[in-house]
Image (cartoon, rainbow, N blue to C red):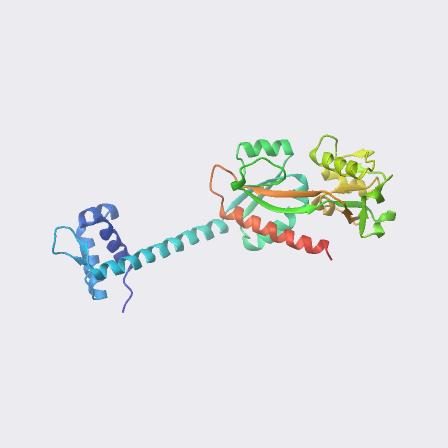
Length: 302
């Protein structure tokens, strides 16, 4: 049997729902004569009477009722086809604006971007690196497509995707006596010179508490932001405790990273705008970031 045009099937669905040619014609925006021809041609091709015309309003025959469910399924399949095409078009010619901190921009984004590029080569991505305060302001104004944040961060959980929990590590110069150890305990660090985060920051307070709980003195002689920690350590200024993204970023080869026991853990998440649906591109970027994290985790254990 020859395949009937979809417009005949759509005419059948609309008439079945409206109950009359007049109402269906208004819905579809076509004249009744054209609709009558469509139904007549469909019935002729199928060899089935779809409507009972013996009464004033059109009523489905038993055969028509059976075929209506299949017609609805066909319409939904076509809708899925169109939606998928729209997604592909947006992916092929789109733009993504991502907010993040300097730490994540250097430690997480490169691998995520490389993997994302393989799946959406023509999409332009703007990675905006901002301070924590500016990030909070931009999030409040919903001025982003996707945002990578360090937790804790107050935001509706339904618009947040947790991307991992990572142990803090010890960052030290390769010539340091402790560099030969694969694992470093807090007690090994007693009396060492430290490069620390500024006092009053969440990261610094957590590290202070870690050492205080262990009964070990922790008073960094040098303080800087997370962005500059590696550079300080690389020049032999001191040892640092950091998240794995900071530890692995922008090293010229003189820095080594070692496991720390006991340690603190760092958690990160992606958040979506709460005032609009999440985009396909944003979801794809998160998938790329998660794949990058899996690869990075493998590197840590090699």
